[in-house]
Image 1 (spheres, rainbow, N blue to C red):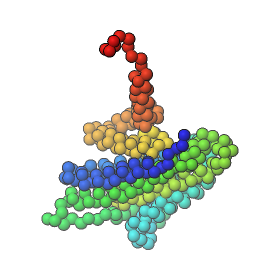
Image 2: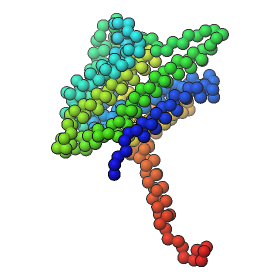
Image 3: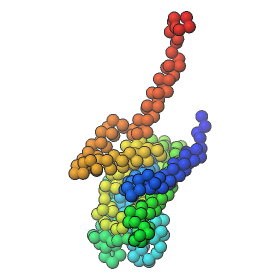
Image 4: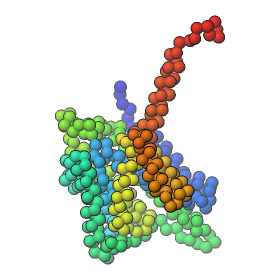
Length: 350
């Protein structure tokens, strides 16, 4: 059977992104001042989706990368250091952050991607600690040492008494970030769909299943894994730069936190590995669950959140996508059984 091209998936993704782009206006009209917090929740969900999609790209080649915090932090500090040294336009720091993260991934991948399983995972985890130490050692005037440094926001709507209320200023700022995050999510979706609907998918799957057989089939395992690693890291680097401007500061311990890597790993597992829809769906669901728990269990919400994650992964080993596919298969099987069931003898027409 001939496999369909990526165009239908890309059109569906474009419709999804266009729908999300209209969300700020809908929220403002429906909730007024409260729309600011809803928009902030949407930004967190989209950022998590970008992180998860980028990690899933590496996982499709069978590698367990724990270096996402390193590339996230590298992107954030690239934006900060570039601004300190050159005073370059803020927006220039975002693509440069992606480029720096990609170069770092190229060097790290070339050195470690021949390792397997837990050895590769440990090497990538250690890389984040190495980068954090390097950043702390940079001159204080450039990176702020252990304390970190501040960055200006990408959007600076001004408060004008009588003309614009404070919540409207916050809304405009959040709307700007929401659209920037959405643009990065669109880029991550396009990359994921093109990989999923092209020959690269077969190369990724072959490398993940059996590298020796993949090599016999003409696939270069090292180049395939390196390509996935570099592309994934570039996306995460840009996310780090955008979030550095949004939060207004970078700090070595927070920016290179292992928490970022854990989120990047857990979210696609919860949604469904090796898919485009799974990580996005998981990011939306988990962000909503976290926010709900935070409001109801302010002191112990992280414990409850962890329990929800563990139980979900135990009972949904293939994630939300696997759950929905299983339900769909059962529905189709039940429909076929109903269609082929013989008519009872002595029915209404008898």
